[in-house]
Amino acid sequence: MQNSHILLADDDAALLTSLSDYFGRYGFEVDTAANLADMRRLSEEGHYDLLIAEPMMPGQHTAGLLREFAFERRIPVIIHSRASSDIDRILGLEMGAEDYLTKPCNARELLARVNAALRARRRQADTGAMAAAPRDNSWVAFQGWRFDLTTRQLFDPSGGTISLSEGEYQLLRVFVANARQVLNRNQLLDQVYGASSDHYDRAIDVQLCRLRRKLSAGGLMGQTIRTVRNEGYIFVHPVTAGNATN
Image (cartoon, rainbow, N blue to C red; front, side, top):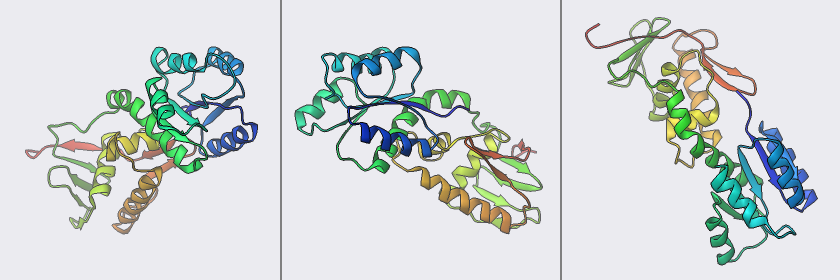
């Protein structure tokens, strides 16, 4: 799985450097454009998953280029601008922007908005690519454990019940439905909370930590949900499924 590739366009060199470094720490591949000419050249040379742009850069064709990204190339656009009036925000959204943030903006908030925009655009593709738990299966089993998808109960090999919160249940459901496949945080957020949710990446980390702890406490040894560096997480055990008549 490749990391998301974003283009940052702004005439503030210090801000470009700061945001490029910040997004890079979260696994994004980042290119920067300091003017419209660079923005045009880079957009023609490479493919981008998202654009963050300052529409107030010097030049005559900012609006046209933003519309091209949003409507023709179907690339999510987030406007990050020093223009803060209501009319500026309205015009930005009319140009096709997914979101509009006024400077100065907390980098963590900008990251959250970027992730939300990417999740929204990936939802349809991810839904088609990821296998849902078969509807005629009421339970799955792995390593002697049994996970009842109807009653939402998890049983260890001795028959003891492992209590799961709603978030832990949903997370385990996604993992067993996609066993031995690497899933990234965006996919997990979409499947657990829904693509329209405003949950941050940290929400998945918290649920994952709790789920791992409960599986380990129940006697499941080793790394059941393994972290794959720079890619995501994988449920390592093979899963078998059945229904109430099995």
